[in-house]
Length: 216
Image 1 (cartoon, rainbow, N blue to C red):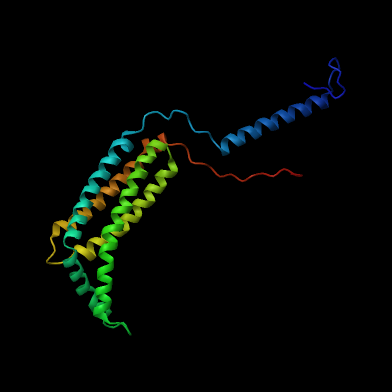
Image 2: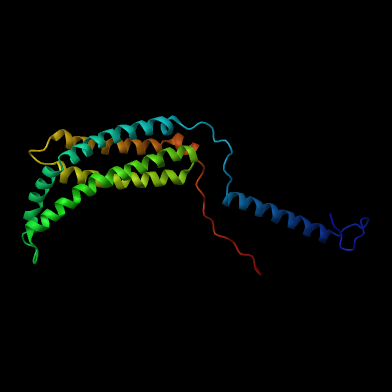
């Protein structure tokens, strides 16, 4: 305790004691608020849940295997797929003014199959790094990024399956593989949302309004 006049034998007044008590209460309140706003991460979160370390990964691997099947088939039969898609697109371009329907259909048919066959596997591969990183980095934010990436893939896989493989002369099992990938990706995402995973991951940061003291 410090004394205004430097005399250690001086008995502080009640007002001075009250002021010191109020200052201590304010300091503790500020420290508690700081801890609530920026909670520290546990040094040892413990073993990761089975739903994250095993189930989500197994579902992802099976999904990737199904995706690899239709991607390999798509590249192997790219010429036939391009012809089918061009024939499907051309009737819809007949009424478009100032456009050669056949040329435009051929242009689109050459672009979209390659875009799907290259783009989707690349994004899926990146999602694996995110899935593994959730456990290694013990990151709730990385889980959110993984789920967002999965949603993007889920939006494009059905479109790809329809435009590239949904034809009478195209094998139905290839079209089905795309939907198997779709379903297993959903399973993988749901595994990361299990309650055990949510309890193991650090709590989300809560945004609170900052109170500005008068004169600061």
